[in-house]
Structures are given as structure tokens and as C-alpha cells.
Length: 272
Image (cartoon, rainbow, N blue to C red; front, top):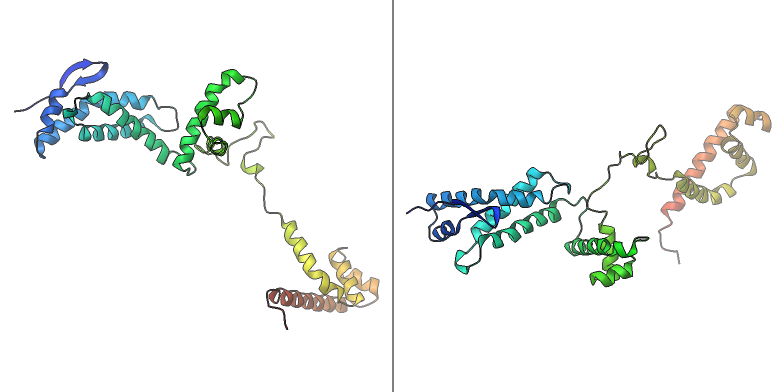
């Protein structure tokens, strides 16, 4: 005995009459006949799955991918449906398909990983903001208002508000302003400030510089702070350029060794 799906429609245009097919399917053992009837039922209900998937278009996922997810939910519904419970297949399949699509958005579409608790808070916050907007058209509802309306704690509301911007990311190449003087998001990002390292180096050098003879300190000042050449320094001090070069080399080597020695001994325990 074989059973086929009829084309009679009910409730929705995409809801076929499959009660008899499901009853027959439930009594079939695993095998080619069961697989063929199962595939026929899935194919008959695919228009409904496609209709449900279409409701989620425009949310960052292609319709083709949404349809595949909906089809997966439909297959799960067909495999798990028990006609003996007396419920219509459509009333069982719709929430199963919708749940599969929502699970897809929750697990695969977020640009930043967000815990499920925060995702649920985000959905409640988004709905509360939308509902409260007509009564507060001149301003956005506050955290306390949203918390009271959505029955959430204020901490959960704050987490939900932050998560509103976490579903999709903005490319660093995205233009923030247009025109000849426009700039991208990457142009607005900060860079490491080398001035902080310079401050640390100068503070580390201060004690060592203070221990140098006055003439060596003056030569270093003229060379590195006044940007004078070795020849100009030699003429100013009345010495040879070669002598200035030797003094600069010896001073820099001495300072480097002293600063490095102080740095390596900074973590040593104090001597008794």
C-alpha cells in the first residue's frame, strides 16, 4: 500500500493536505519507501518554509541561505512530528522552522560574540524602545523606563543597549564623511603615542646625566637639544671635532650601560 500527498490546500495556499501521508509514514520501517514518502512530504511543505524564510529578508542574510535554514527546520519538523498527538502539522512545523531561523541568526550572524542572555536582553530592549518611542517622541527612553517596561534590571538594559550595535560591524574603510576632505573610519583611529616612551627614557636618564662632568653634559645638550653639528660644538668649546666625537661616543656608551644596569637591578631584592 502506498500513500501520496494530495494537492488540496487549507489555511494557507502553501499548506498541503498531508494527514494521510504522515499517518502512513509513522507506520513505515526505515527503508527506501519511507525515505521516498518523507522526501515527498518535505517537498510539499517547502513553499511554506520559503514563505517563512522570506519574512526575515533584509536582515543581513541572503534569501537563499535563509531558505536553506528554513528547509533544515522543515526536515526536523517532519522527522519529529507525531500525528498520533492530534495536532496539525502546520502548527508544529511553523515554530520549529522559525526557531531554526532565529537560532541561525543568534549563532552565525553576530559580528561580535554575544552571550545568549545578552542577546535576549537586546531583543527585549529593542522592542521596549520601539514601543516607548511614540510616548517619548522628543527624546529616547531612559534606562530606568526601559527596565520597568521590559521587566529587566538596569544592568541588563545597559548590556542590551550595547548589544544593539554588536550585530553587524562597520568596515574600517567605510567613509564617515563625503567630499574631497572625507575620511574613513581607519583615519579616525588613534595610533601609539611615542611621546610616552620618550618621557620614560628621559626620566631614566636624569640620574645618569646628573653624574656626568659639566663639559660632557654641555656637549650632549648642544648636540641633541640644540641640534648643533660636531664641528660647531668643537668651535664653540675650543677643541677639535675629533675630540667632540670621542666624547659623544664615550658619553652615550656610558649612559647606556648605566641605565641598563639600573633597569636590570630594579627588580632585585634590597640588600641587607
